[in-house]
Image 1 (spheres, rainbow, N blue to C red):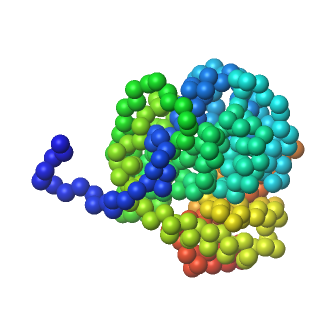
Image 2: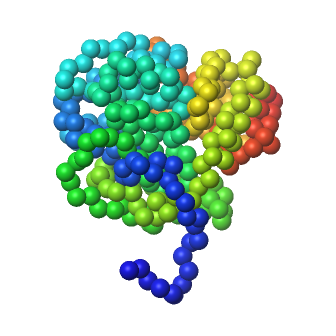
Length: 315
């Protein structure tokens, strides 16, 4: 029984998780590790264009891996034949590649692993190991979801995230800049973590979000930027009918634009700097990492903020 009375806690709305039937873990990379462990894979094919942390579980479990290239549509250049103890990992890039996910599922079946860290709202396919990251879309310090039909025989303890919330609280009180170093420290603290269950705090926050509103606003903001930047964006990625994007990828040769936006307090991320170490400078992945500006289109913002972004780009 919990405590009765005393001081008040945060008053959070009580509802359901968007992925209510998924296994709730602490990080997406640990969802990946969970799959690698439970499936006993000996080798995994992974894209060059991915975050460096995805190698953590592979190296930890001493599993062989092989990189593959993607094309301008962010789809695999080739589809290797894989063995009975091998897997193919694909990233649903920026929440825009669900149709590619479906095609890959037809080829690889249950040997396919889908990284939906950038596609929180994408529907998991039956029988396909699929994982999601909550903090890429919402204000939590940790939290991930995993769909798999296999159970890992390990006793998992709950993660604790109360000491990782300072960047979220500072942003409300003092602004984004004040909490940035705390944000970086939180990101670093998630490295090499054991597989754990999602923290109770993250569970509470994620059960109180208006997910339908978030989906609608993200699509509206993406559409706004897509129409306004049609002539500026060098490589248009179609927003599929059911897709809910993480960001708006804007491809440009303007190497000064990213810093211009940051100086104007439009904070844009880089996905991912490690790619330029892994690939040759002539490889497409290096060009994507170097020339793409990922514009924020999330549920915190509406048309007014999108207009500000467009004006800064066209100025």
